[in-house]
Length: 260
Image (cartoon, rainbow, N blue to C red; front, side):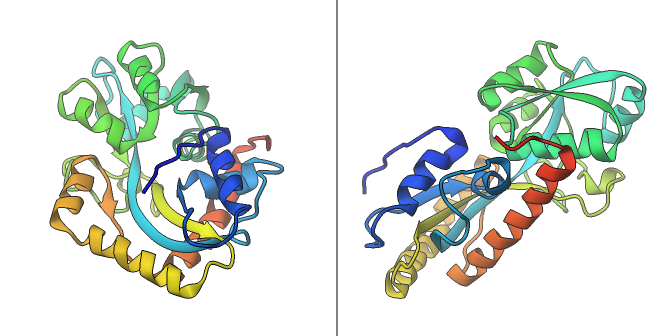
């Protein structure tokens, strides 16, 4: 197996490449929920989801988390929103159009009605550093890059975007518990191939992925970094992708982000 990183344009460069190759099963796409966001965020991402791909396997997912500096008095999301009414707050994200950005904008500005300004950084690490340095008020990031700093007390977590609390941070309330029933947001990692990939190839690769995800070692390694293994069928992943395109498309429109 050869890993070829084709970064750029929120994952569109890699996705466009795989969408245009022969469906022989030897070149596959490892991607994230950004693929579903980009369907609406970009006027022409260079592909159409799900038309140009074959869903193979959902691998894992992880929630987003809202974090502040320990120096900020609020201890939970409700207190933060109460204390921020009538003020301008800034929140860091890993970039415009990422799922943490849409999550933060939808929650803070659209639902909570705060005067919230997004400050995009080139990745989660600098966004987290900006919170620690009190350059911004809050950060909306995925759980894995923030987990160690939360546990070390360098960041204060306000809420997590799963519907239920997570074992890694059992005392951390969910956004749904914090006055926004039904609020849920994940970043996911999945495996796709080009359109018209033979069912026998899809089935074989899906079985291999699921076997790995059922391994205790793999599940423990994923869990330690804030991810949850999600074995399942290609049909289930295909349905999930279609739902994600609709969901994130609505959030892009609701937040008023102009397609790029």
